[in-house]
Length: 245
Ligand SMILES: NC(=O)c1ccc[n+]([C@@H]2O[C@H](COP(=O)([O-])OP(=O)(O)OC[C@H]3O[C@@H](n4cnc5c(N)ncnc54)[C@H](OP(=O)(O)O)[C@@H]3O)[C@@H](O)[C@H]2O)c1
Image (cartoon, rainbow, N blue to C red; front, side, top):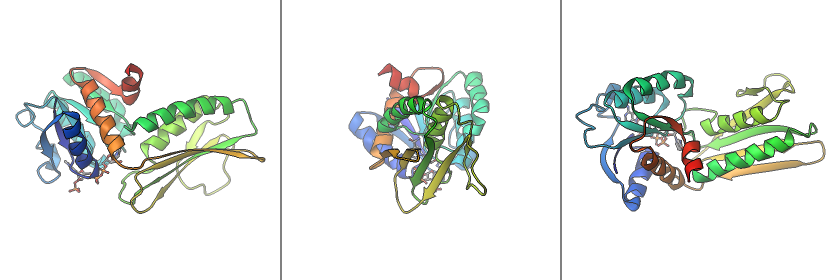
């Protein structure tokens, strides 16, 4: 499979390293310098590419998706912080008849963690004694907060726990309402990513945490996703990849 990496930052570099080990060919690396207004993502420039993989920034990813779609190529989107534009992206994918796969978190461990939290929150739905929260820690360079992963965890909980109706993503400047689920973010140093879900009662607390050790897990997941997406049309997530394994 021939891939193009869009964005040569921490994740772009990790994907380049893992791709070589996994037998994918990195045909192009598209850096910020050459890609002002997504101008490098032309049909001509991407002609030998099977799948593009974007790990850039929230401010440019939408234009990149549009340009790759106009070039008729499939794209795996690792960049987070754009999910409010998902409906527009779906229209672009349909119009250009391409395949797009996105995930706030490509790591295998996190995708297993989602299943654990799904089960745990269904259990806690039956026990009103427990309150709950989601917290995440990432490195200081991360552009968006809360992380897309924390929001997915929040959605899983609000879907399963009837007494939690809305997420509070900001600092609580007044008393929390009982139907609010607090999602908190901390930025420090070079932390790759830590997500915790806490179930708290007056008498005990249960804390479930996923800690990423390095970026290789994300890179591997993104490459798995690219292989899975090759030749497909439509909008998919990592859930589709996981359920087919
Ligand atoms: N889904 C997941 O599993 C997962 C995992 C890790 C990270 N992420 C997300 O992926 C994104 C990138 O993370 P990262 O840690 O690799 O960040 P990073 O190290 O800051 O890398 C982003 C790179 O994108 C480049 N860039 C900016 N605009 C561009 C453009 N128009 N065309 C091409 N490249 C462009 C930046 O170049 P300059 O440095 O020159 O600006 C930088 O090299 C973030 O949104 C992060 O939250 C997702």
